[in-house]
Length: 226
Image (cartoon, rainbow, N blue to C red):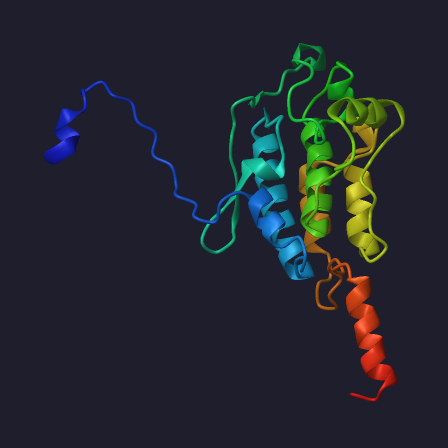
């Protein structure tokens, strides 16, 4: 080889990563905050994430910081899990897992409370991400970090599921963020539930309608402009 490659020492260790031009899932959701996502897109993104976590858990790896900022999209909107900075091999004894690891808003109550935990903390975080993907919104936007921590642990605070959300998807969210980790499903079960979800009839989040726009539209209807 020649050029710049010759300047690197022979002992240099490099990591080659896939370039993902789609940016983070968080930014993608923010861009779609007003118009929301088609239900098929919601399920596709959720399946990508759930399959990735299922694979990690099958290898005894706990990510411990599952959130939409740590998910990247390629040019075809395929989701890839990133940022393994606090990931670790799951300890045989849950008491050996370090407490309070992750990001507030996504952390499971047992992690927030400094209790022993296992891979089910990722399942909880997935449930929050699933809500975020469906709603294209942020969980708990009006609460401080301290309020979120306290209310998630002591008052069973969870994001409010919109009434337009299909029961099948709402059920997955509730199962994943159950306060009892033993009641949360394994990620491979979540994959099966999402694969069985019917997207042919729609079911995506309904964008909020501007009251002023509705008023103007009704005036047009009243005057037979249509």
